[in-house]
Length: 349
Ligand code: SF4
Figure 1 (tube, protein in one colour):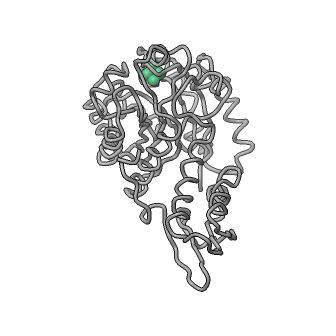
Figure 2 (cartoon, rainbow, N blue to C red):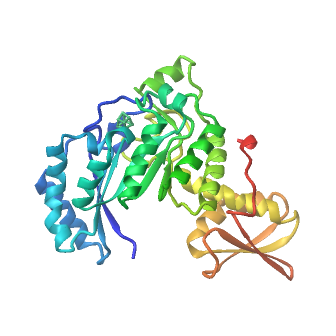
Figure 3 (tube, rainbow, N blue to C red):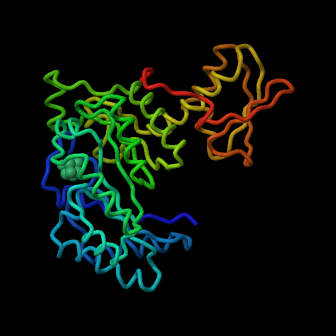
């Protein structure tokens, strides 16, 4: 059964760095105060009441959890212990930087119910990390991943294609390296330029050219497909559109409020273009959860087929995998998958 995540945004708390792209107050949509014990208990109770008995997970997102003073980390985790013991809570998730966690901390966190650690790796290229002001090397990420995996804690990795000095090739290498090192799931956040950051200053002075939306989507298609081929789920593409993170605050870069849907939807469109000849009448079936991806935003996928003389009837088929489409052309039916039946090349990005 899928768990329900109860989020607490701890914003810039605990982070001693200023990465060039970061305005954590905007990204988290919160101003940065740590929740009190009372607020934690109150929110858990609120979510529990509507969770329909799904397992509950508390997640401390944003900031750098393990850079907080140990007493502060304990203050956040201790109120959860009775709830973990009596089964109200199933697990805890935290996020942190690779250079702020070691084997001893992972063991301590694990004892206190932390089952998932998300690492903001961003890139596995030392030059990209340096240009982005990250303050650590890729070796720190490998070492953190090793500690987390060794203790059997679930590992999420966040990557940011399009940072200063990054190329599609280095983005792909970063993805391949974290998958090889054992990432259990990924988040892909193409770089956006937020107002007021060092990256915005570089962009406005012409020292940084961000990924456009089009190039970002092309790169994400490639990265998502590689992750799917490796069997590693990508649980999110693109920063969440929230209060404080909108067109007004995003100066440039690969930004769209539903970037993940845009990427998947274009992959289905690529399948349609690849396997349906112009001017035919077809029936295309998809898994029920993928209908909006197949149809495309504002029916764009179907309209683009109409433009080449294809009449498309859409149907649902729960026996298909989510990545598959069944295409029926006259009396011939075939199943195609966005994982293996289209090829994305690094040179097309
Ligand atoms: S480490 Fe994270 S919170 Fe700190 S400045 Fe960088 S991106 Fe922001």
